[in-house]
Image 1 (cartoon, rainbow, N blue to C red):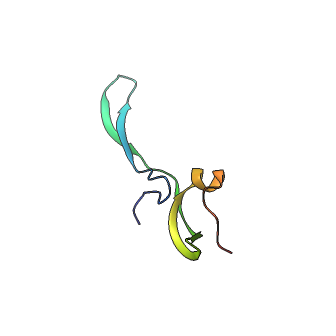
Image 2: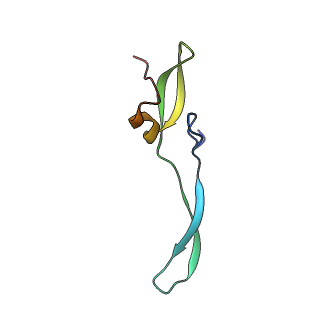
Length: 63
């Protein structure tokens, strides 16, 4: 499963971790994605959706 939201397209982002002595190393942030059953074009499908899209109501959950 790819760490990508099917609704908004949010993916992993990269940056630096900075220690107390200000030495830098690489790190990444992954979106909080869940696999849910949703209504897509009138039919039920399993899609990966970030929790922000779920919370805001952009996705209609299937029963």
